[in-house]
Image 1 (spheres, chains in turn orange, red):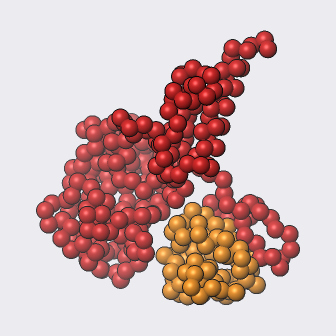
Image 2 (image 1 turned 180 degrees about the vertical axis):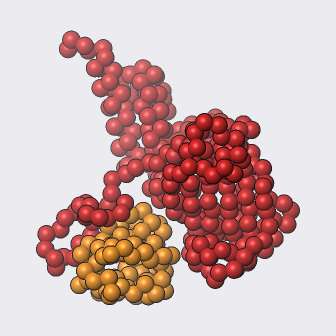
Length: 84
Length: 262
C-alpha cells in the first residue's frame, strides 16, 4: 500500500498508524498546518510515535486529536485519502 | 437594453477579468507577464480604465502583482500561509509606514517551561531573549518578546539586536518558512499600557507565534498589540474536504463535525 520511496506516503502511513489505524478514525479534517482528526478511542493514539514521524506537536481534547505538521498537510492530504 | 451603458461596462469588465483569471489558471506560470493594457483594450474593445479596473481587482486579490517600471505579472500563490509569515517591519513598510524598534531588553536567558515546550527543547535551554517596543512613524504599536535558541545562531546579538530577527535568521541560512499564530483579546496590563502609551481603551490583542524553518522550530514570540491601532487581516479560503474512511460508508465531504476547533 505504501510506496517506501515517497516520503509523503510514508508520513501519511505513519500518521494513520499513530492515530490508531484507519479503524480508529472517524474523520480527518486537513487544515493549513494541522490535521484535526476525530478518533473513536483516544487511548489508541500514540503521541510519541506521531512526534517521531515528524509532527511538531500533538494536542488531544476528548476524541479530537490535532497533529501539527506545517505546510506538508497540503501534500499528504491526498496520500491520507488513498490509505483510508 | 435600457441601461446599456452601465451594464455593458460592467459586463466588459467581468469579461476582461474572467479572461485574465483563465490565463493565470491555464497558460501562464508564476512570474509570467500578463498581456499589456493596450492589447487587452484592443482585444475586448473596452476603455483602458475598464482594463485597469479588472487588473486592479486581481492585484488586490493577490492573483497578479505589479512591479514598478516592469509591468504586471502572475503572483506566486499564497495558499501556504493563512496569515502571512512576515515581520512587523515588513508589514509596516507595505502599508507605507516607517517601522521602528526600541529595544527594552536583550540578552541570554534559560528557556522558561512554556518557551521550551513551544520550541520543542529541554527546559532551561539557553535562549536569545529580546523585548522590543515596535513603532510606526514613531507611534507605539506593540510590545514584542522573542525567544530564539542560542545554539541555532550563537552570535545573533553580538553586534546588538538586528533590525529584523527574521532577516538575521535568513542571513544565517535559517529561512522562516511557516508558522502558527494564536491571537487572543485581553485587557492590557498597567505596564503594557504604559509602554504603548495607551489612553482610553485598555483593549489589546496578544499574539503568540511559533516560527519554523522547514523541519525545525526557530523562534517563539509573543506580541501585545494595542487594540485601538491594529487590525488583523486574514485571507480566507474554502476548507479542504474532510477525509473519512471508505469503510464507514457515505463520504461527507467538507462537513464540519461538531466540536471541531477551527
